[in-house]
Image 1 (cartoon, rainbow, N blue to C red):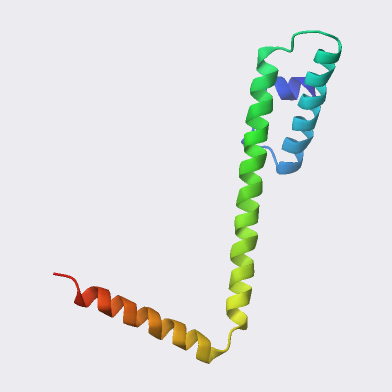
Image 2: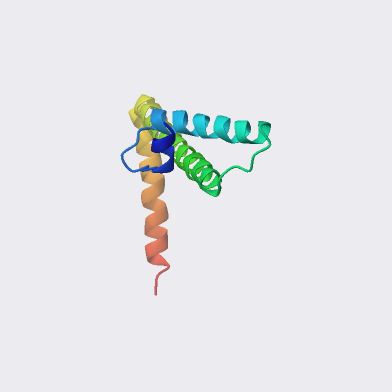
Length: 101
């Protein structure tokens, strides 16, 4: 796992692997400190890279789930409500076009 962390390649890694490596990197850093040793510079770099990647992928995943939930909610609306929303959008667009020079 140490070699995998040292030669980190985030591109081919799935989220579970990133989380596991981040956990290992944190434990490794903590152990260096416990032993009163200076952690290597590359270790902090890898911790930042992994943390950033995990945060980014988590945000992407949450955004996808939010879009899906909104789509499901939209599908549950009655047709009359959807028509009213489309009519309101058409009216707004027509007003914007009428105001164009």
